[in-house]
Length: 425
Image (cartoon, rainbow, N blue to C red; front, side):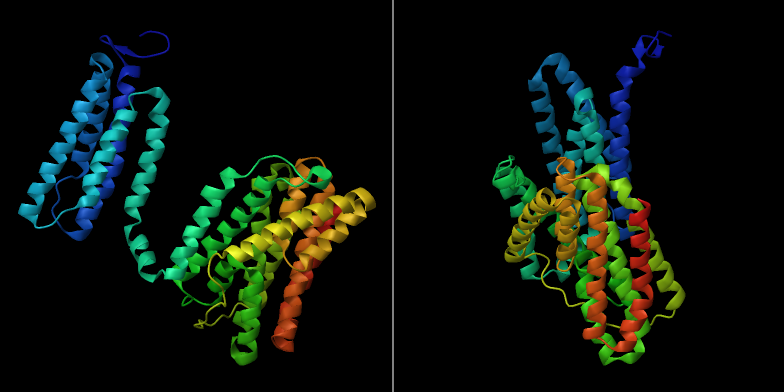
């Protein structure tokens, strides 16, 4: 034995390690492919053992290429690709079908095995192997999503990719304008962040539907817009009095979803505010959820749809970007000319329309030391409480008094706990 590694008859464990990792990668992908074949009760060309050997072959090829030159790797890969093509060609003749997914997966396993040979790319190979296995395993979910997706949603997905992967990298990462607080890339990043959260929530609703009850609708709808959920539930309560308990529960769950969303946004933008915000956000969430379960435990499964727009539209995204920049500028001006009182006033006004913009604005200002962290935490909490009051008003205006009173039994204690958390902080 030598210091730093285990030596067994001249073979160092460090030499075997890349091959062991490639075997594990092949086993990971091969297990999923084998499971897929067993589930379909069909024969296939490549299963668990084959994928292990394929990944190992990639590592061996890379190892020999390091000894005999890069041409060896090119020849080895070409030969393997030809062997895969011939093997799957024979499978079409014998089995009457072509499993092209497994064919591509085999080529990927070979390349991942080759990546295992270098310490610099080994972790990349492991990460990619996990992602590849996930992609292979979500076949049913992916097919179901494709079946229900509409043309408008596909176009909105392309728009999302455009603003996130095309426009964002092109924007300058410097502050411009008065007070040096407007950063074009940061402003656009907030548009991408909020749009992505909404898109994920919208996709979950479209995939799973609302047949599991209003409570799930409220939880998923809250990811997109808790105000939209409150509006829809108010209309349901006015039209069908018997669904009021379920509508109250859904409205509460949707509103409680807003608080973790705020924490997520703050964590992404300014991690230093995350823990100070935990107390007010978590306390309001816990009070809302617990009281909803205690007061309105009986829920009926009602087939209803939350009135949501498409997952993403360019015009609302641009309006949000402009609103975020305006709130950023007004918050800075208020802090300069009126101190902490100005920041609190800006958060109260902004919370009437949208809690995300003021949250992201104050988190950005606090990160740049332009607003004190304690002031930012209190102002974000005030904005969340203001937004909760807006939804409470909607339940009375668009719903019924009974519906509004029941929602108030939960929302008012939530707001009270939030105020207590501000004073404790």
